[in-house]
Length: 258
Length: 258
DNA sequence: TCAAAAGTGTTCTCTCTACACCCATGT
DNA sequence: ACATGGGTGTAGAGAGAACACTTTTGA
Image (cartoon, rainbow over all chains, first blue to last red; front, side, top):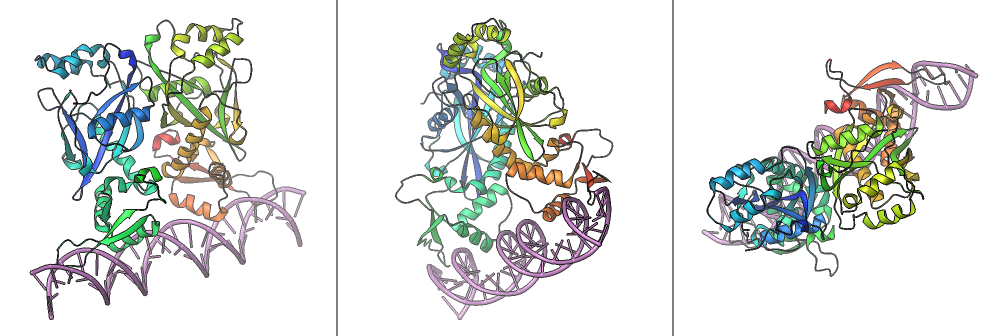
């Protein structure tokens, strides 16, 4: 079980009152999903995966470390999208109440109780969104998680604090960036059909795209490589598989090309 | 002389290691300007106007407070655009060197020396850009400024740390937002001619816009109110003045309408 | 009457959209 | 053969760019 690298006695190892919250997007079968851990408190509390920033690492590195710990995959596509800095972003009272209701000596609970002086302060949080291939992710619990699961965007559990709003802002940013930065491919497996890509776009923008026009628009971008056909056994024409165009011999993942 | 509200003995009043840097854009005579204070150190050091976040205020409020102190105007259009969080963002060595070279007991120098334990840490900084009507601004020095002046974008002085990069990112964000959010009017006086607005666009995007097409595009937005003509005394047709459309009777500044 | 600059209209092109048609595949 | 769904082409609508022309103003 990975550590979320929280403050310990050496809490000065981390920047105080500054956190990172990550909205991890995944895609499967026509739906966008978000990776949401359930907290160990009794009573169904859900919060975004997050963490803190070490004195010796950049905020981007911190976000990457936090996400690699939660997803088990490296080289994640990450985008900083907004800072949340309202004065109401303080956990002390809620934490004290929850800790009073959760007295058993669970590791995570103990840890939070020991670090309440730190965790109970007002936090400014930097929002990152991540795009991952859901099939590559094995969600990993930290010691403060009861579980970590994927939830469709339209069936999110009630989120603590402003984490619901953070997801909303992440989606707005994703919609703004998807076309411009050509990052949709980070949500798909290496090989995919045009229909899969189109359904992904429809899931992100929550609207239909005309089949033929979408194909033309995407192919005209000139970033896809057409591969072999995909025979599914269905009694219809087999679609081609495509791959995001890799530049020369670089064995890079898509987002590094941009 | 306003205070920049920095840490004092009661440094716990502020969030540590977290700062705000502001890129204040102004426009005049076909050029974009940025408000840049010169620091009191000998040797021409220029840094963005910035400050810190009180425990009792949101980051947006902090940015507003910082800017109101520097410009003397309220109701400033503000946009958070990015966080800068590299590990190299640490002033200690540079500060110690500068303080050693500036031994006279100036108020600002003393204050920095007294707060070096605080100011010398690594800082994560939230970037805001502001759009103001240059003619309304009376730049105000804080105790660590030697002067505060407007500089055209293409004649910026050498900036400390990563402040040059911050300005570049602010401009990129401004270019992305200008059309989408209809915020150009915050850079102009209340009444302006179509040519002034067009020259502003040309300054922001550093490219020409066709006169007639620009006029059509802007008027088709339906947000401008045509006022009386502006007689300049020049021997040519007098242009109309326009005003950003106010909604009903609200005496609001433009950005509040969005 | 003229030059300068503002206002306005027209055409051309390019892109996006909608509709149509053809092709491959397994039953 | 036929239903199903993928690939491709074409005509129409709309946005944007280029060009032209008219109007106003003060010398």
